[in-house]
Image (cartoon, rainbow, N blue to C red; front, side, top):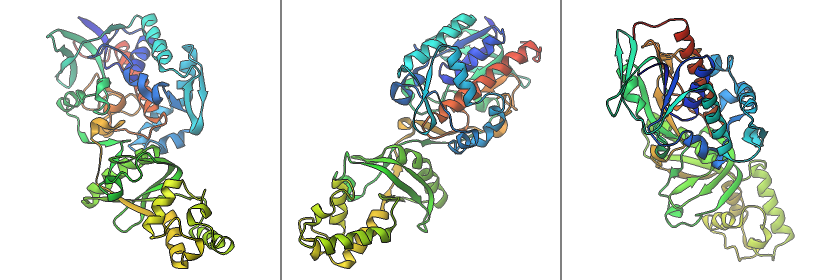
Length: 427
């Protein structure tokens, strides 16, 4: 069989690439090793599908700490606002939620997936599911053909690899594409988990003292060996039976990985500031005021509302303060220490959960070897990459899907244009 453009992978990048190539009137085929297309889209945003983010481009780039700057050229051609218009043209009305996150009005990912599949059908894109790829054949620095697991060979003038990374493997992202990229001469930067829960063996974690407790709107910092913050994120976090999780933790996780590697650390220290809008001195004065005005009131009742009750009781115990004792019995020194704990509670983590448990893969095909305006390989003519297989990773909140859709769009457009222009050797 012969096609103009072969797209490998039915995730957000692959679907967008196939649509873009189809709109250029190319003869397009999309192959997916699993039985369904759009599986990663279907579970994104808690099943509601956070299709993009409406923050300004500079902010979008800041929220893609893994080589986000590589996307500046791509965003000048197709950006987050274009994604919004694209879905609206497909009949998917979107709404903006907190922090610029964009969701379908119907709050269901299946409407997004159906719209994309309907567009593929309208464009006449050939879809083949349960169709795993064995290898890609190259000859004389030119993409030649794709060999399927069953031995069938597909001649293609352009190939787009959009098979994802190694995170969330049940959606089909099992790292298949790295070998094909290496064979084409590409560098695969070290793979590591990002947007992933963290593991801790602190006694309070092992004893499940705080398990299930959420802290809202706190500052969570990753500290370097000198105790200085590498990164701080103000969001919610959750204590678990294995460590910590929640939005703030997920965003900090990649910096834990990098700190361990940079300084050869067994453990990395994190800091919780549970009251980021109040200074330590102001907390101390508040405690002293309670002590002076309500001396006979129990500590637990006097300080009610200062922090979530379980966390307050935890910090009281940490500072050797009996919650049932009268406020007047709490020394100034203990008030100082409690104030400090509210702002500077330190604990260590020793690792992340494995890559397979991560939401996003860090590392991948080096972006130095990819044309930022076309997503074509600089190593192999006719070979394009898009989505999470590239060494691009962002925070959760619509940033990774934005990168996937934008790189997919450019790969599809340029793979088709390359065929139109006759810019290929004998296939």
